[in-house]
Length: 64
Image 1: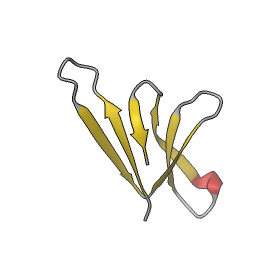
Image 2: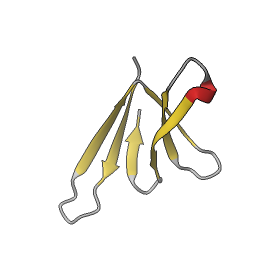
Image 3: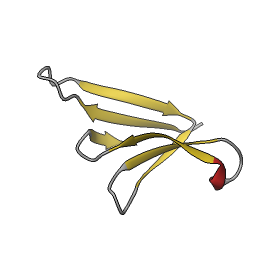
Image 4: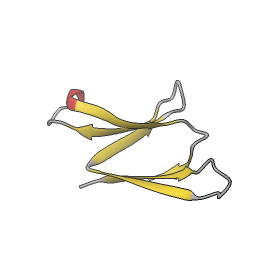
């Protein structure tokens, strides 16, 4: 089962780093908007995927 892990910048003065994990998910960066989109499958077809998270480039450090 694939897991997408996103490491986020925290915007308060503490400078904390937050990690979010999305089991059974896939991700890609939208080439038009540069937004990281995380999807989870609801069936066996690509059309059955639902977007479960979206991150703008200034909020995440990296993803894998």
